[in-house]
Image (cartoon, rainbow, N blue to C red; front, side):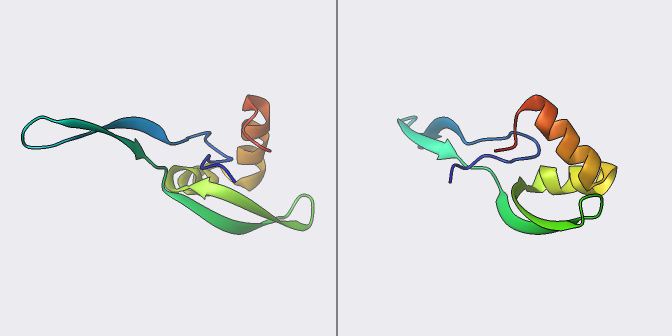
Length: 78
């Protein structure tokens, strides 16, 4: 399973560790992902999603149904 949020589409990005001597080495900045179960009232089912912390806040703010509809329109759900 890839490290991609199914609600916001956030994914790991690359960068560099920079030491005191300014030496650059490659690293990845991973997403703060959680595997969570949600009860989808409209469909009367439990679903399991890979959600980032920002995705959890989005679900709390606009609701699960609206967040899933928004993510499906943008192509983040798989």
